[in-house]
Length: 462
Image 1 (cartoon, rainbow, N blue to C red):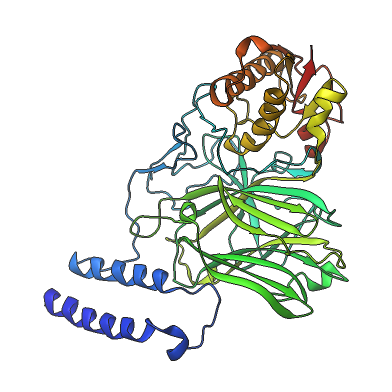
Image 2 (cartoon, helix red, strand yellow):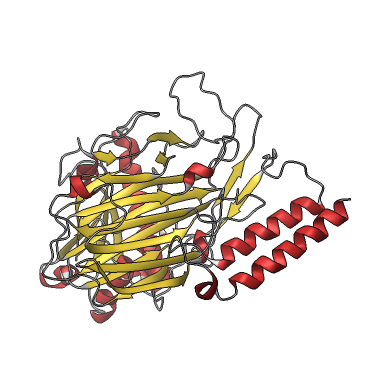
C-alpha cells in the first residue's frame, strides 16, 4: 500500500514538474520569491516522508543539531541543540530564575587570531567609522518589544539559553523598522545579524527595504512603494533577488541570485542559517554582502535626487506555520554608521587613526570576519609606508568590571597585531600593543550607539 501511494505521489509530482519547467508560460507568479528549487525541495521532502511511512510529516523529532558554517578557511562556529520535550521554540523568553529551557545553544569560542583573513580577498566591505545608531537589544528585557522600533506585526526579545546575546524574534508577517535608521547620508553602512530556521511552505519570504518616502510612518505597512530598493530571499533556501523602483516603475532587478549561506538544511529546514548582512552606500552605488559574499554591487542603485529615509525588515507567508514547526526569523546587532572614505590616511598625515570598524565577539578578543575590509585597508597603508611603526591601542565600553575591561582591551589589541602580521604580512616588530580599557571614552556610555563608538581600536604612529 505504501509503495502504491509513493508511486501515485511520484506521478503527480512528475506532472507538476512538467508544468513548472517554463513557469512564465504556465502560471503567473504570485510572489517574486517563488522558485522552482524551493518547490522541488518540498516535493522531495514529501516523497521521503511517504517512503519512510511517517504518518505526520510535520511532527518535529527530538534531535541534537549541529551547525557548521565556514566564513573563512579556519573559522568554525558550532551550535548544539537539545530538546527536553517541554517546548519547541528553542528560545528563552523569560528572565526569571525558573525559566524553562528546551534547547541550549553554545558557540565554541576560537582562540585569538583563529580567523584567517586573506590580503587578496574580494571582501572589501569597510564599516562606517561614526556609529549613529546601534541596537543589540541589551537594554530591552526578554519578552518585550524594543523601544525605538516600529512594527505592524508582533515580535519579542529572546535569547539562546546559555548566551547573553539577545535577538528580536519576528514571529508574524509584517514589517519591523528601527527608528534610528533615517535621513540616510550619501555614504553609510548598515549591518545586522540574521538568524532563520524552518520553512513551513515554499513561498515563505524574508526581505529588507531601503526607500524614500514623504511620510515613512504612513508608508510603513506598504509592500510596494514608489522609490526604493527591495531585496528578498525565499525562507530556508539560497534563492534571492532584488528590485529597484523609481516613480513606481521597476528600473533594475534580478530574481535569480543564489546565496548559499542563507540555506537551511534538514528534514524541515531545522538546521539554522546565521548570517551577517552588510549594506554599503557610496553615493549612487550599493553593495550588499552576506557574510563575506558580495551579493550585489550596483553602480546606479540610488537616485541622487531622492532622499532615502527609511529602512525596514519584513516577512511574508509565515502565518502558514504550525505551533510545533514555527518559522523563525530573528535580527540582532544592528549597526548604522556614517562612512568615512580616506580616513585611514590620517595615520600617516596626522599620526593617529581610530576605528570602530574592527569588531569582536561579545566579551572576547575574537575578531569578527566582517572586520576584514578594515584590516585590509590598514595593512595597505602600512605596506605603502614600510618605515612606519605603530602602537595598537584597544578600548572598551564601560560595561563590566574595570579590571576585566583592561585585560580585554589588551587582548584585543594583541589580536589585531597578530591578524595584521599573520594574515597581511606586516612585520610584527613594526607594531606595539597597549590596552586602555574603559578609561578613555569618546562618547557617552549610557546609550548603545555611544558604547559602540567607545569600543574601538586606535593606531598611533611611532
